[in-house]
Image 1 (cartoon, rainbow, N blue to C red):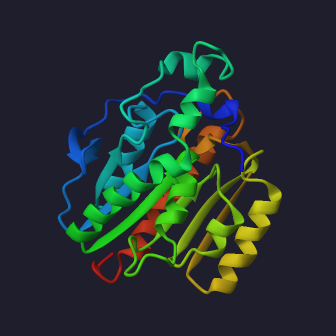
Image 2 (cartoon, helix red, strand yellow):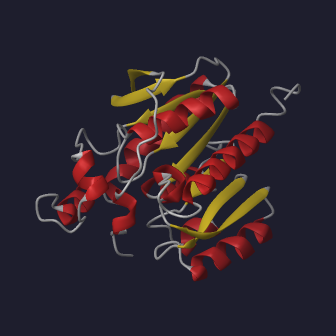
Amino acid sequence: MTNTFESCCLKGFKWEGTPAGHISKLANNDTYMTGTNPDRAILLIHDALGWTFNNTRLLADHYAQEADATVYVPDYFGGEVKDPEMLIHGDWKDPILDMPSFLKRNARDVREPEIFETARVLRAKYKKFGAVGFCFGGWAVFRLGAREHQPSLVDYITAGHPTWLTKKDIDEVAVPVQVLAPEIDPVFTPELKTHTFETVQKIGVPFDYHFFPGVSHACFTRGDNTKAGELEAMVRGKNAAVGWINQRFVDVYPEK
């Protein structure tokens, strides 16, 4: 497995608006927190643009309001925040960004333990708890949903354009799975899409697969209104995730 991000991950469109949440701590990680539900929570695992990216925080606000949940967006890059303007408008291969070193510092084996730990804290606190991840967060939510965790760390997962995902991650998932899959994606390849679609059905957990024709990797957080169909895909992806989350919470909140 090669630890690389596609350059399109790092070119974002900033939504209008100011995030409504606040900064807190979760298992020693600085964390954006939004929503106040004491019974159900969502762990939102950011993409390459990090936990401070405005789009990601506004997306967390949408989940908190529309799924009536408390949403956490921890910093999983060890306090490192790249210049958002360089990431959005620049070349990800620019030596100033030094992305190879950044990716090494934030590789799967480096960040997985703290991702698991934050999930354990939320699992112990909330009646219902799920994880949503984009790009970097995509492999992570599959690992949170792996059958090795007894009892389960999460009640469900949503993965959008996952990066660094392996067939083994897919084979070992044991909780309800939602996948948001853009058509154009060099890292969530047609082979991985097919493996996901076929394997999760065989595992027998609830499965919700959404295909987004004509749009590319990173569309669900980038939402670039200059790219045909991308803003619509972002909104559709958000709505799909909210619907899935509310379905997963139904046994705790039968009125939903």
